Image (cartoon, rainbow, N blue to C red; front, top):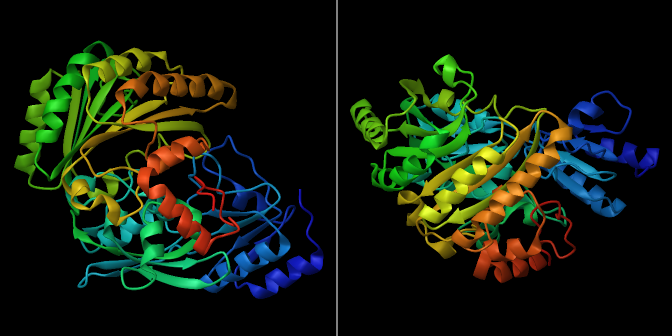
Length: 462
C-alpha cells in the first residue's frame, strides 16, 4: 500500500470541494467497494469529486505523486478496473445530476450518473436515450464503450445519440469534445472507452419513448433449444423496428409469473419489448408463440423505467462475475449446436448467455463515424456471463465461459468483440475488436495521453 505524506493529503483536501478519503477513515471502505465482489482493491486515496475542477485537481495530484489512477462511475467494470491498489480512485458518483431540455430534446448527464438516474429524469418528459438494461450501471462506462440495449433497434447505440462530452485529459485540462470542437477526441471517446480522459458530462439527444411500453417474455425448455433458436433467427430480424427481442439462455426465475414447476428450470427465453402500439406487440408475441409452444409466457404494459429495472436483482451487488463476448454474423446451425451443448454445462443457476440482434438503427451510423469496436453490419452480439454468489464456485464458472467462448470461435466474426463485454485484458483481442480503427486510436492516445495515465481500461497503449 502506497503511504502518502500527511501534508500531501492535506494539500489535496484543500484543493477539492469534495471529500478525500484514506485507509482507516470513515467512509473509505464503502467508497472502495465494487459491483464485482471478486475484486477487493485498496486505493491509497479516494477523491469523491463534486465538480469538474475537482477532477482536474485529482488528476494533477495523481500525476505529480506518481499514483496510478482508477475512475469509478457505476463501479460495474467486470474486471474491477474502477479501483486500484495503492493508487488514486476518482469516484464520480456525486456527479450524478441529469438536466433535461424537453423542448430541445437534450439531456446533460453527469459522469457519475447511473442509468436509473438518466431514465428517471428523461421519462418524466416521456423521453429516453438508448442505454443498457441494468439500472445501477454507470452511464459513463457503458457509453464510452458504445452502449447497446432495448432501444438500439429504433435509435442506435448510446454513442450514436451523443452530442458532446466534457473531458478532463491527462494534463489536467478540461475540454469540450463535439463535432465542432476537438472532433478527433469526440470520435475517440465514442467507443474508445476511458483511454482519453475522465468524462465529467455527457450531452445526449433524446427520443420519445413510453412512458408505458409493451413487455413480453416467453420461455422454452432446454430440450426445445435447437428448434427455438432456429425459429428465432428467422422471426427476430423480421419484427417491426418498434419491437426489440433479446434471446436469453438462462434458468427461469422464481418470479410470480413463472409457474412453480418451471422455476429454476434451464431453458431459453425471448424478451420482447414493444415501443409501438399494443396491437403491434400482441402480433409480435403471436409470431413468437407460433415458433413453438412456450412452457409459459407473460405479457403486460409496463413503464419503460420499470422494464429497465427488471434485470437489477439478478445483477445485484455482492456477486462474483466473469464475462466474455463475441459477434456472430448469423445464428448458424453450428453456432446453435454449440450454444445448446454448452449451456447445460454451467454449474451456477445465475449464469446466463444473451444475444442482441443488431440491425435497423445500428446500421444507420457509418462504420468510421465513431471508434466503436464492431462493424456496422447485421450481427448478433453475444455475451456469456458467469455469476455466482460464492467466490469458491467462480473458477468453475469462469472455465465454463472460456470453453463456451472457445467452442464458438469457428462460427464468429473473428476474435474481436464489443469492448464492454471483455473482462480479460488481451491486446490481441483488443486490436481485433477495433480492426482498422486501432492505429488511429493509438495516434489519438499519443496526442491526449502520451504517458498512458488512463490505462485501467481496455487499454490502447500509446
